[in-house]
Image: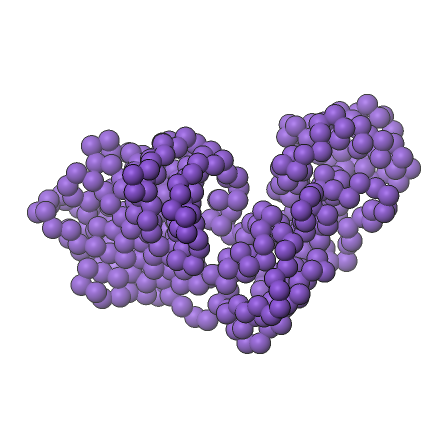
Length: 400
């Protein structure tokens, strides 16, 4: 084996500069059993050069699990066994994952982490067509200014209703579109509210052209027509916004106790009632987050975090994949305790979560398709060996 080539490919992998052809080549080198000693040496050499930092490990893990070959699972295949004397960190598992996903294909991984570096990677099985847990039938609803509710899931494609000179239609791809036929600023605002149930996302195009994606168990209240000096909406839950630019009429969002002001930008806000925080994450443009007398002007890649209990507004960096994967049909967890994971799961699968005994202090991470069954997701978490579940109808009990 050409050791220099292996070292070169590993360095590309760590630096996030590896392309798909090089990734395939690296997988081929790793799959040769007679190269085991050289592989160990190169792993150690590359690792020593880049530094064994936890943030780098997680970033590298994401690089691997985002590879296109991670979309198919073969239950019969197993994760390569790792000798006890090898370094048990996420970086090594990421390298092992390259071998597996490029040669045989796998589903999604969970990893379990403790106080230090992640210690264990667990294979998650791909969903089967049968045996999925059924979610209670619930509808995305549109509440008109009159108070009348419409079930959007059952509405036919085309015009649904006209309100305040706006034609509200359902497009072929299922999104709701507000088409402003003419402008009538009489000073009166008619409000609509879209509400998503457990297990459903929905997209709406507002009358100004702003696009909004609502996550499960969320609601958005907005004027049918934006009139006056501002465009103001109210959010409960989580939504991603692509705001139409209008300097003369700024877009204002209220989410619990946080106010977000934008001109035209792409951002995500999470403000569930059962969360202790409100998060505004900026992907493009500029926004200002306000709370009482405090304000933060954010740039892309920055997040405003409001902690409800202490009333503090702070600025942080964030993982764009973690924020956006819900839109793409995934759960994504990054070093989260089991109670936070179960909170997210309960918003998608119609379940009641109870806890028995002391909660595990372990942190978990992973990526999982929302279209998969609840039982498969919980079974995968059980494989970490630190948590167990009992399912009784819609009640899920979390045990040590």
